[in-house]
Image (cartoon, rainbow, N blue to C red; front, side, top):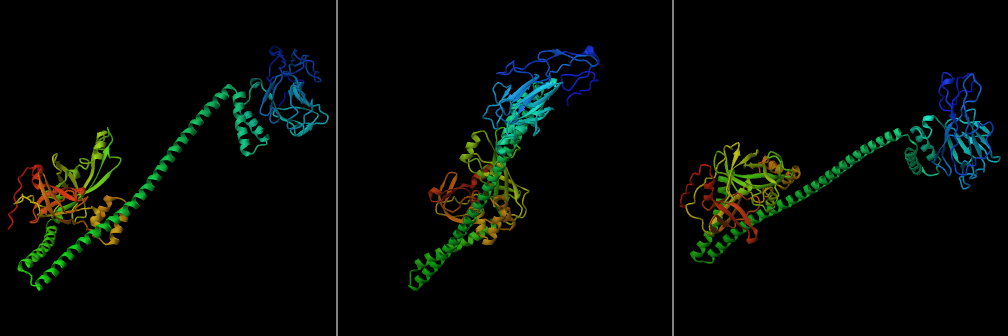
Length: 590
């Protein structure tokens, strides 16, 4: 509001808002200063009743004279050719129009017609007035046409119905050449609203004008606070954006991992079902081949007897039939006698990063399967070293160890036939010369027979039959002996978890070793070679001769040499026994 024009008031001031003083001794003189504008003529006529320019005048209540009038104001261009600009004035009058000689000129190419001398702003009695000077083009204040009117702070002035729009602000002394933040916000909003751009363009215009005014017209304190807040907001937004990015990346990785896991599970299930079917077909083929061979020999024997063959030929066919039947009987007898002592081993291991604690868990776990067999009622178990230390004979594992990673055996469980609960296997001793190791079951099993460690009465020789008891092909061989519906149901329940699948098979009571028959191919130091068919999962299986005596521990199969397998002689187990007891000899063959 303008100061009161009551004659009895103590003092009239040129600053806004007015300051009160007690007496004339405290009165200040204020000099009216003329602002500098291009093309402004000093000889231009003054508005009526305007104070003399440059005069220092004052007035105190009760005294004759005139009070100082030196009002500061600003014009904010909301539209027109000066759109977005703010001009500051501390003079008593100025003119607006198309003519370049005006204090605030508006070129003729503006958005609406402006008269050469359209309007005049002047000060009278310490109040700002605006007067219309154009006969055919009105001047509007707050959207109303006027001839002359007293201006108030924040009034809107428009030069013609479609002409440029301005806002006048009467400036307090302390804000004579700057804007308050709320004024900057208001001006930026109104300037954007006057633009003919779309919604997106108006938003851009608002932001651009806001930034421009904050940089050019805000106080130092306001700029400091705004910059601080802006930097803080940028930091918060950046932090939130980074967190959102990291969260999004983690989510995408989880989705990718989940997709890969589901796809791996489907592939694993399909592969396992296919392997199970193939193993079932192989077993059926072997049984069929055995039956076909027996029927063929029986038919040939009947044919030779009918044809009056020599007794020697008949005896040869009879011995072959007896050998086939004995092998079948021997396999069944051996499985029945020692089968409960042959355990299915399931283990997991991984690698700890260099410098990690020994009690840590590897980030990635690898699982494997094998065979082990009991040799002592106290729970001692014989198997291969590469099952107790699965990284010991693997090239890729050796490369990881060379980079500083530490191998760690996480889990090693023994599933004994007929037992639904697995037993924990701990390493007692592993050979550094041959592929042998001794383990300890915990808790020690009860009611399970053991396989005696006896020195064969005669050294194994090439051509002699052998029998291997174990778990070739791992779970595939076990699933192959189940009904299709039961096997597929267990695979689906396991959900790509091999350890869970083994436990489910054990709960079904379906863990039982298979018997593989063959013949000794050769005997070399620390190795016995034979052609009994066995694959992954058969490592650590006991190898028996035709008398049922343990002669070797199966170690590996060389598929590139006609599927020849080899085992470590039983005599080498003696070096690993904790008590280093001697191995007794088996009774001679009767």
